[in-house]
Amino acid sequence: QEEAQAIDQELFTDYKFSVDQLMELAGLSCATAIAKAYPPSSFTTSRPAVLVVCGPGNNGGDGLVCARHLKMFGYEPTVYYPKRPNKPLFEGLTTQCQKMDIPFLAEFPAEAALIDELYGLVVDAVFGFSFKGAVREPFGSILSTLERITVPIASIDIPSGWDVEKGKADGLQPDMLISLTAPKKAAMHFAGRYHFLGGRFVPAALQEKYALNLPPYPETDCVLQLT
Amino acid sequence: PVSSRQAFPLPSLPRKQPTVLVVCGPAQNGAIGLVCARHLRIFDYEPTIFYPKRSPDPLYRDFTTQCEKMDIPFLSYLPTEVQLINDAYNAVVDAVLGAEVEAGEGREPCAAILATLKHVRIPIVSLDVPSGWDVEAGSSGGISPDVLVSLSAPKQCARRFLGRQHFVAGRYLPYDVQKKFELNPPKYPGTECVVAL
Image (cartoon, chains in turn purple, blue):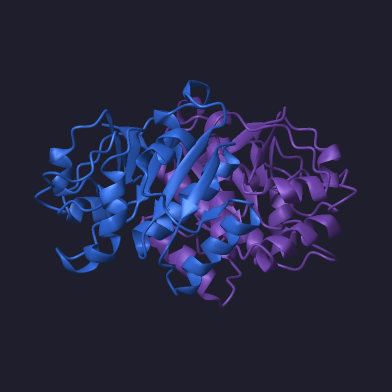
């Protein structure tokens, strides 16, 4: 977890990347990975409906960007975003989604069965690699419900609620994990079908410095399928 | 950046090193060139940048830092001897002037650069508007790019484009903006952000 934070720090402080830039590239990677693993034609629901659950931090921001790109790729995303930071970055991302007619739910579906009926996929953008400590409401109940759905879950960077290094045996079991920048330790406990790498912005010098040993991305793709 | 790659896949480049010269003007078109150079680097090309008039805009200054920190060299001058450019690079990315320039005015400082670019023999990839062209009428006697990447939507002068490939990069435009301006964009394949016209 510390290494991931150190890499981020260098990207922002030394390389002068803005959070906006990297979040946009991260969110785009997520949408692209999803499109590769779950093409709209593969949905059993009548429309390619996707529920994007966004948490209170940067992982949630990644989810908003992802939702917007999913819309452009022909999906029908719906966002649930209960705790919104008071910062222009997140307000902007929210506006972009709203202006693209992406609905924002006022309430989280009460039952897992309802989610299974309405959506073909859930994107878990609740907590990321900075997550520490106890899960606060409303996210505790949200994660409990998500643990009971049968439609696939695609988690952004870390399955929400998992310890960032040790995982969580009785927590969320996502079908897809999109590791951003580099896989985190928790990824070793990932047991789903699809593991993608996204966030193709790490300069070679940083990759070497932190011995990331990332396999090469294909051509100009912004994602790499690891499994 | 993706479209530059599609036009010139790495294995096809004539020189041993996948070198590309990215010429950046003082405004937004130049800044887009900086972002393009950074992505080219990630895609394993070897870009070199010529960016003589740097914008004071903090966002664009950060783009410059990102490129510098990624070891992308910045030339201190552009060789006037065209053969040097032809020999050193596989292609030139023209990010000098975009659609924002008023006729006459902003073009003067870039005139010398454009005069040199007019004579290069290696392919030129122009971003949005071939630099020096009038945004609507096009140009006679200006640079002749091999590849044009229209940003958002093709500008009127694109009708005069005679090069090999014309790409549109505008997948980020929301539908209501597309409708409002009657853009009728083509369908983008899969998850691609550019489409060849």
